[in-house]
Image (tube, rainbow, N blue to C red):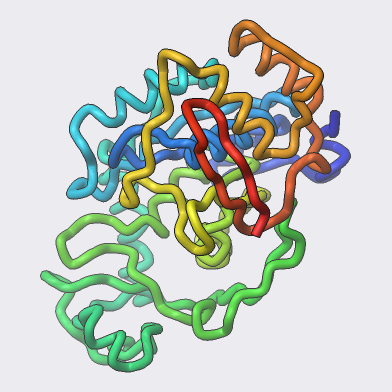
Length: 321
């Protein structure tokens, strides 16, 4: 089993309030836009195992800031599923929808220092100009009310070290793009809230799917701008139906079965590189205990995507892409 000291000798994490965390604090942060599917189980399991193998805490945060996409009852259903799969979290569940005042407190000084500006550009206009936002409104002095607010990208991150994927390079156009921190409908944007939440919760390690590699660069830049200590990042392969087509709620991926968690849990472990050919378990708790004791980062495949084919209930085939 690997240890946190092996991976990061300098693992002490300090926040702006003066407190410090000398133990691992990880998190799983699903969007309650539907039930958990196999892809989200892989992400949850990877973050859980990495935390518990390092004798760390594993927190759950509901990323329900995008309220139009939230499905009523989905948050409770996700928590029920995590419990059914033995993925028990530490502490209270945090809901982004209850933290608007916190996000505004962080955004206000950025506005005061003129690091934020209003943008009137539509997606259609941005697409017509090449698809990437070209900082078109940076010097336009549009009124804030009724417009999206963008943060000036003063700390572009062109590359970073990922614990699994290694050195990650980000295209200059993406890294230099001023991005939205508050939408025209008044909702705070993901890039802002995820950084604020990870900082406020003292998250030291983020383990999630490889589809978030590019957003990580933006988040690292915001950690710099806010003078926060950034967590370590590890991006595990994304479960996809076909190349570039990830399993997701939007793509109607089937929900995993709460009444029969063992087959899907075993399949998720195989996806993450565990060899279960000579082991058998009767319940999820003993399977997870075994997985924690056998976990090592070297087991994990460093593909960006792995194709998943569900042959029948609880039986999956995997093809690295």
